[in-house]
Image (cartoon, rainbow, N blue to C red):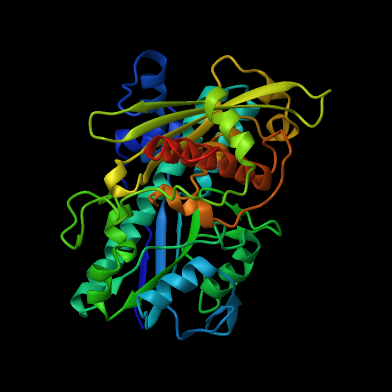
Length: 400
């Protein structure tokens, strides 16, 4: 059975990846204090960070109507199950990556010492390291699979859409049952990991490589930005085979509300490449501290219409000048860590906009951003509003 352990992977965080995770717009160039903090975080991690990755082939796995059984553990992820079934996967890889506990410990010290800027930049760098390690793990698996005449599918993790994060402790137990990981990882009852800059993932493996060419959504390369990879089967974020939006959509949100939000809260900006940049402003209130008003901006970058408006980037952050978010109970407890968590949530990234219509998500209309369920609910509202607006532009004679 295949097994990979690397306790000293070379991790090069691309500037564009780091800048995105810091919350700056695409193409931004760091200057002044921000550039100093960038250099400091990179230098600190180069000297003190202990990244690692681990992957092994599961002894067995099978699919039934309701679950995925990996060895003797069952998991209920409809999205992962559909991917494995479509590709006729015959094997499964379980994997873990981590930026190491040192980064989290240092970031905590910086926060306690009253250095929020250093905390924020180090936390964002840890997220970038995890993204890079995940791509490196995928590249190693692609190399192994290619030599066997097989192909590796895109990774999927507990906490992603349609895979309950509460199954993460069970997945971690599965990973460690044949031996310890290179460094300790613990899963809390909530599903969160410690150290938090870590990721657990499953990669399907198939011998039917022709399936990947017919079913383009199964090609992992489209969502992998690892440069210079000799195993690439398709260009990064290749346009998907969708030609239009569903103009007769059945939305989860009342169409009158969508119409009002599209007119009052949404702005759409066409790009030269045929894509669309969308900005949505959400106004809400905290659930404590006498209901303080707050405002968040949602930035969504869409590919061109002929590609099905694939979601190429999405980001949520407090609107410029907003102070209401600092009164949220979770911000008071977590500080900028909450904002990093919010910025890192990108539901339906890489998928065509039409998929929001079939997205099963939480219904939690709380005005604040403390709970993942309320944040997922808001992303649903935003993406449905964007879909509504573009569908009406595409078919202006549609009734409202």
